[in-house]
Length: 473
Ligand code: PLZ
Image (cartoon, rainbow, N blue to C red; front, side):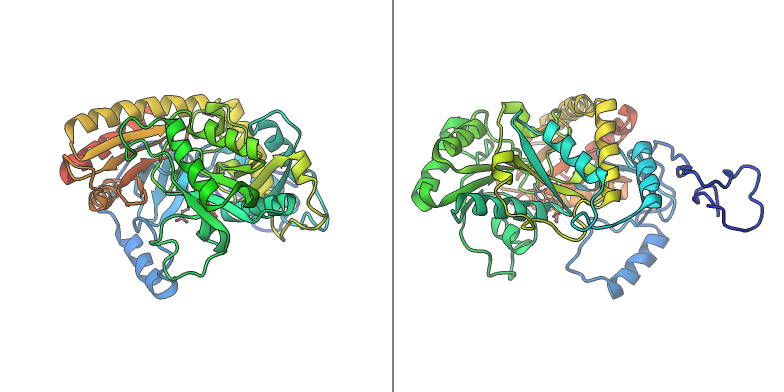
């Protein structure tokens, strides 16, 4: 074993080499070897070892679970992924907005190692522990609004959304759940029902949970020209009142900036108008900040940008720096109505995931990652705008903070060009840069870099993307 192995907790064995950490019963953290924050390609991509693994995968893994590009990862640090062939790739996707604090963030590694050596699981519903309470305190403090709040912890984003809806129905006694066009909320039965896109999320997976309604989102690029946020909200509100009726509407679920649907930033004023309608009608507002939360958009939460205070907020992804953890945070007077034992799950709020979350949140505070996201966003926006000036196939550049995208279209039209997005993502991967696509029409290229990415590395990644655009558009 190399210096990457953990401490030898008093186990008998040969004397360690002089450079190895001393065996100790205290918790010593041994970080992985430092990884240079530069792109370095040493084989064609995918390399031979990745190809071998991909062949094994075909025999072993259900094809319904896909990957963007078959580069198998061996280790990672900061914004660099090292694949099994020794190639260093720039990660501009953060595992879909998860490792905002960077891969192997020292505080997170330390906290996880420390916690797993103490205890990995008790089940909070059986024997509770402080870490769960501390994560709930942090969520209650940092999520929008200074009212009294309570939180409950779960494993995945979809599970958090399901539970938010459970809470709403329990409290309001109203069944109707209103979601938006282009929404993405997960892959479980209820969250599939809330998700807008058929392929690949819903196709032949029904029947779906009932009492889910869908209304129009504010989509400035595709809405009638000049439509304001207030007008887009009036359009959605008319649909809600006509299709559902206030008396039947328990909640509105919305991503303040839509993620999988295409990084759609609603027109200014849209969210506040929807929130005001909810308040006026006793309809609860659930903000799904699973993708936008925890500094990604340049604020702690995307709702903060327009001063919107939801009744409930769902979070996951970046909260725990790579460990699976999700939460529902809501107004205390709502959360307190659910009967004892009504919420939970075996692993929800697992202590290792909670320790990672506390370290990850502290890292965001210590390094002001909200500000870092704003700076990254400004850099990407400038580069994307320059690319747009050169390529008529880039119909729109949008996003906020380090959540930036370009929508690709047939030049001179608004016809979505999903094939171009696919080609560009593949070309970037072949050159060692991980990018992602998204969008209801599959034609949006999106970037979600770790918020700790070094400027030179971001610059290199954007250069690769610019070359891919020139080659593929
Ligand atoms: N709500 C806003 O972005 C997850 C899913 C990708 P889970 N987004 C990435 C895919 O193809 O499955 C997401 C989200 C928003 C909910 C979820 C669901 O979170 O942790 O994947 O369940």
